[in-house]
Image (cartoon, rainbow, N blue to C red; front, side, top):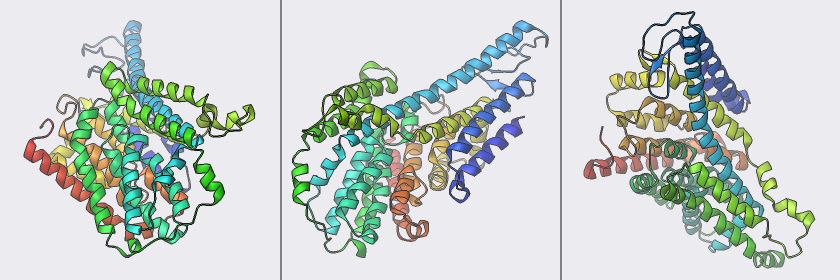
Length: 475
């Protein structure tokens, strides 16, 4: 039965990797994989062919107590205890998954409310240059900073929309869009709310807000800056760019963006407030996000971007409209993936969880954990980084690698920035690819080497800093 569970996971993973050739939304195999894996675990547990590990790290099956003392097969009480233990284990993993999903839903809703109130239109007024080099650094810096606040996917979508207004020529624009992918992924790696993977590590108590920012801000800056410095010498970023003049209507429209500015700064401020809330109250992050969403929702009920606002127009700016724009397919994808990974974390191989067994096997083949994590960074360019990080969280425990151990910071960096090496390697890249029809081969030839140089430079800086100042907890 263990083979069946692992096979189900591997097959589902392969289908997710080849979602584009198969023309199948990756949410479908993720949901099937999560449900079928747990169904197989349940069947195996019920007939006694599978042992599972509970939330306390104790191994048991249907016919043995948690302490390991054999019980009679027909003992109804023993079966009830075992079944309760199984259900409790499943609910535990569902609860940890729900924390991440509720957090993401809250953050997505805030961003959509800001967008409905045209808050991101304010950014266009901040770009006053015709120099291609200066524009490169402006949009790059915006991508790096915004991705740390509103996540790298949303930052990419916002900036691609902005570039469409600033750079009419598509052949020129896709160079800027490609560089934004690098900047957004680098910016998301050092923030607990900048990428789904860092959010997972943060909510899973693998990293703290202060620790993640302190140890990854410099490597992330290097990962961002090195490719941009090199790009300033490339031909596409030489000279000046043609930017269309604003019409009278657009100038008048920009003058009426007071409410948009209010919603922009309020939305960004309330998202940034979430880590502060967690630090002060020691409550789970999703509660802070719910508080922030409530505040933004409250203000959005009484503020609007139009002078001639009517009740009929109110629906166009309401939180209900924002909720309808959330990508629920992404939320369901995370649900399926995280539950599937949890099933592998639960089943027992050689006395430990399956993922822990994989980690021990890797350590015997590749004793250096740094090399394993660098490989994870390269894999994240090919395979979605969410299941990779979820698997790593099951492979390494908090006993040998406590919160803010260098391992977790390096995983956050590698998984977050490694995806830039291919256009399909990150959510930001996939979004940009869809919006601007970026060709996979074009990106591979023109941009991948820049992303690799940035990834390698940032990783080297992280390892140098760690060796010089003994950053984090050694293993």
